[in-house]
Image (cartoon, rainbow, N blue to C red; front, side):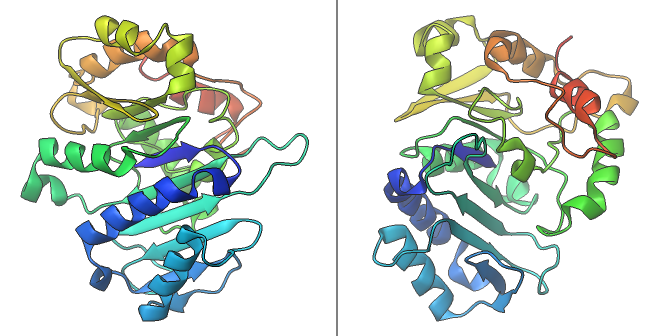
Length: 283
């Protein structure tokens, strides 16, 4: 799940604290093995002090500095795991800065088997219930080590041509255009109140959405769920399983931001290719 937040982070800190408490109560602290707090490139083993630091930053008891950077994971140090929580909470923007804050949360895929799609979706809705957001999405992602974006972007570019339902995990790039409009549509799509106004309001959007969608109104927008569970959208099957998603896309397309000047990677996933991927449901 990716959620794009307004700046400065101090304006959304309290609801993010609410999200964190719900998240950690659900996953349990014992899942996590390593973290990076405060940026930099040094990881540390998770212990009780890790959670005390996070709590002090998210409650405002201590300052995290100009930006609030929390990256906590399971698995071997610096490597791919099943659970992950990343927050980049940015301070006041300087003139011309376009990037916004974001939260990325990764859950193990077998959660769908143990809980089912309905309960997983309900969990996502509960997490964002109080959080101000521009937009966001949840579903299957190309899962990767949090510090290996450049190492795997070529593989994500290739796989994205086949699996249209799987998100390219690139919030550190998407944060540059999330304030301008909706980034992507997936199984779950978040639309903040500003985008809803451009679409005629929450009720207007809900009327236009297909009957297979479930819409939940939260404090700062709506959460759209297209179908019972996330989908791969595998083009090689010869079947289009993303028909409902395409219907959702038709409704929200007017507020999506696409510009070929914005790219996942200049060499492996350039602006034209990025724009094509963002429009993958436009048919």
